[in-house]
Image (cartoon, rainbow, N blue to C red):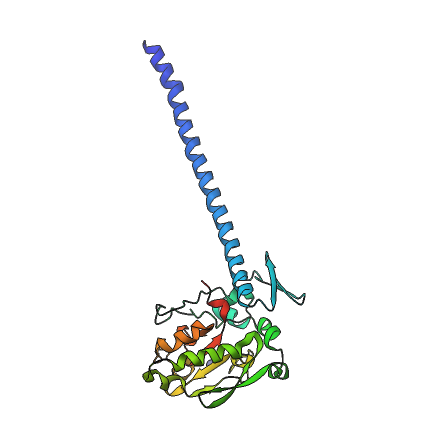
Amino acid sequence: MNKTKIILLLAFVIPMLFSFQCNESKNKETKSENITASKQKKDSTKTTLTGLQKLLKAYPNFLDKADGNKLYWKDGATMIYDDGKEKTHEEKLENADIEDMISQEYVMGAKWSEPPAKNFEPGRIRYEPFFEKMYGNSQSAVTSNLTTINWFGTSVQVSTINEVDKKFKAVMEDLEKLLEKYHKYFKKTAGTFNYRKIFGTDRYNAHAFGIAIDINTEYSDYWQWDKSMKYKNRIPFEVAEVFEKHGFIWGAKWYHYDTMHSEYRPELLFN
Ligand SMILES: [Zn+2]
């Protein structure tokens, strides 16, 4: 090889190689961007479907189907899943959509993170029209769906919708089987149905729909009773576990803790 050939080689081949390499890495970049974008798209679709599917599975008597961003009720009504608004936690509590309502994943079982992280309180965010549609949108409508059950000697009223009354009875049966040392926590109740707005808000809580219970306040802790927000819980998980088994979530797993409180929210118990 003479000098000219070597110079020619260097002049053409090396830049060509370099440009190949550039294209290659550029292609890789574009490709990886595409993968990320499609993954994100897939993930957000998955979240939407999963959230909606959880609802369909939890409330088969009321809900028919879901597609895209819509939930179809069996009576023909539709509800938007995600209103697309960015919200702070406070705004979610005040003005939730269905997506906000199930955006935090409730951790079933004994291994939840205690104390809960700031504002982590799956189930505390509720889209009220959803519950009003099932359980009643006025005191008389809710009341017409209630039945009286005997909670270890106390008469309380609970909803018959979604067979919540039967779920309460199943909870009682299983609680009764727990060791005697646990009985003091649940045999006394501070109440179930109560058609009242949450103090200081314009919202109803789960008690207004007849789907919640407060157990013995003597062993309970509630963030409203302790303005320091120092998390405390004295109710053993063995008690809450029985509630979870039958579709009830537990307020001790909330940042704004309410350890006596359980409410029927099966949509949050599917993982
Ligand atoms: Zn309560």
